[in-house]
Image 1: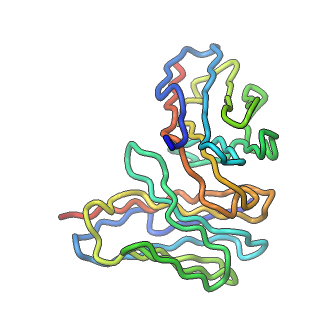
Image 2 (image 1 turned 90 degrees about the vertical axis):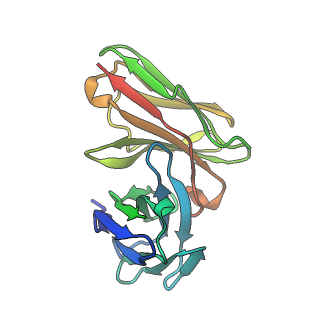
Length: 112
Length: 116
């Protein structure tokens, strides 16, 4: 059974703090790793799709790194803002004809 | 583009009734995915299509669940008969190319299903 673990489950930070979360996934048969941002009462929105070991991607204040050999990805948010409050999901794919296994997410709350 | 469209947004039904959820993917996308989100299990992939053909339905929980994609712009997920444990939010998503999992997926707003 493929397992995707995210930590921490939840995080409370102050506006302006920088933060990061972890996604752990199987290190064999890697195909792609997705990060999604999911605001309450909305639908998941893609942040990044990462496919190569050592990949680093950035979108504004949010960036992500990927280590496929050891099976983890980090998501970083620099200078958190209240509008960053959401659940951040990662999802692992182990093959082009396979599945997309989602973690349970990290719920981020940013206090003004 | 209006994005992925799902209907209805909310559905309340009684146990034993048939439920049909509908999805219109983004025009030009060749992959369509159905997901179910519950508190216990999180977001789970139920089935996905490529060019209207079902590729993997291993996530479909039981024979009570079926999905069709008669054309590139429409898909249905049907539950017959429905049970209270089917209560969840059902998301449809679409993407273009990349074998289905190499490119970002665009999610619809979801259908919140409650089975009494």
